[in-house]
Image (cartoon, rainbow, N blue to C red; front, side):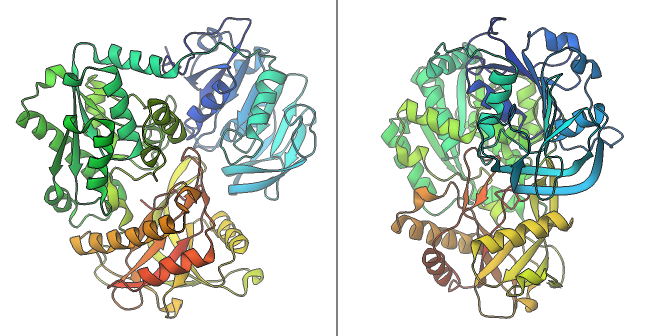
Amino acid sequence: MAEIQTGTKMQQEGSKPKSELGGIVVLDFGGQYTQLIARRIREQRVFSAIVPCTASVKEILQFEPAGIVLSGGPSSVYDSDAPKCDPSVLATGIPVLGICYGHQLLAMHLGAEVKPGEREFGLSRLSITEGDSLFRDTPAIQKVWMSHSDSVESLPANLLPLATTERCGVAAFADLDRKLFGVQFHPEVSHSEHGLAILRNFGIGVCGIRPDVSATTRLSLLEEEIREKVADKSVFFLVSGGVDSSVAFALCARALPAGRMLGLYVDTGLMREGETEELRQSFRRLGLHEQLRVRDESARFLGALEGVVDPEKKRQIIGRSFVEVQAEAMREYGIDEAKWLLGQGTIYPDTIESGGGAGRAAVIKTHHNRCAEVVALLEKGQVIEPLAEFYKDEVREIGREIGLDAALTNRWPFPGPGLAIRILCNKAKDARAARPVRLATDFAEYRAVRLPLKSVGVQGDGRTYREVVALDGPLEYSTLHKISSDLCNLRTSVNRVIVRIAGDWELAEARVYPSGLTRERVATLRKADWIARSIMHDAGMTDSVWQFPVILIPVGHKVGDSVVLRPVNSVDGMTANSARLPFEVLDSMAEKIVDLPGVEAVFLDCTDKPPATIEWE
């Protein structure tokens, strides 16, 4: 029997749908956005269930679905172990929509040719050639979000092409008679500007589903789930001070008596300037400060990370260290593990990017709350994560419903591993030189070098760990976006592009220097981050970006570091645009940061997600 994932009670809107209402089953091929597809369907008051792509037709039909969606995934349809679904799904007479990998798989089943190696990441311009079904009441030209390395090359005569992009000749197709559709792009992500209308056209138009307009109180269901999970136990909560853990902690505090909740904030030494005091004030305003303990464990974390360069190892060490601190604190506080659960503010992107979910999702980066030790506790039923099925924007909404201060619910996301994953290290014994990159003649005003420095990316629903291209030239956003798109789509060794905005030396002299995670480098980054946050605050622009990582990289022309500014806009964190800040704001930041001791240059990251992740590690 395949493991069926239908979400929490709240997400199911209370129950399986009545047959006359219908619903949609999402077959999970390991895509990063599978849960997001199901969420977008639910937002239209339509039931959805996620099942592994290996589910039998019998298991799928138990939901009496009116439609089936084939999700994206990290594989190529030509891989020897590529995930497949039962071909008889197409013989059920139920309408099918294939997305990304699902689009390619559906096309191949129907006799089309899929061509490997046709890469396209980020925003694309979609041109509609047939708009009477899937694209009804949407513009003939629209922006969509792509993340694929293969493409449908040609269609048999019985399949109708619906749309194209500059790089993709078959961006959408249909068998109108059998109600089978495929789209190469991701309509479920917020950056596909008419994606919700497309999903609505499929669910309500093609499948004929009547939305269930019955209302359900979200908070009461979440609190009920917490009480059921906790039963007669208590909760020992790890609190980072960020939005997710604070909302989860406050939610559990609503559901449980005060004597059965205790929070622990661990100061890892990797927090931003003023972070610990901000947390104390936030919890004092919430009336939860008496349920919070603070421990300074900076020596432990910095010691464990000494000499570690690989980003995955960093995250795993940090996750393991958190569990060690939690166990020691429980012993000190006299807490019986048999009577307590570990509470975490895990949200869905943490789970899916760590390789979780119903399908075979690729590991993009192992979040600290998904290290092996935490997974072992999860398998024993010793962890409660009330927000584990939600995205960042939903968590913010829940926080507002609880009545949390806007200063907390609207704050920029900050990763649990803290500044450790915003400080890139290099274990090479000698400095390594950058290599020149030849750009297209359209970009003659720019000079480019490829840095022997890698960052994490997500391309075609899979993890990449590739080099960074640095540019010198005009700060012209549309041109920089075009350069970034071209380099990351056409060069398989690159997943991120940055442009220098401060530092007076020849970019060709750039070197990557040996470096580690030291207190001195943490202090430098902390100061640079404080400058960026302060200037954004003083300019009244804090709410103009969704997140603003500041990164320290071991790049210079002598022996020093450079700082990378990474402002992005997103809704749920699964996709993101590089934010376009006013030049005067960037100039002010860059001038102050480049004056910090040891900082030789300031760069701006101008890459979208995909192909780059929001964080560098």
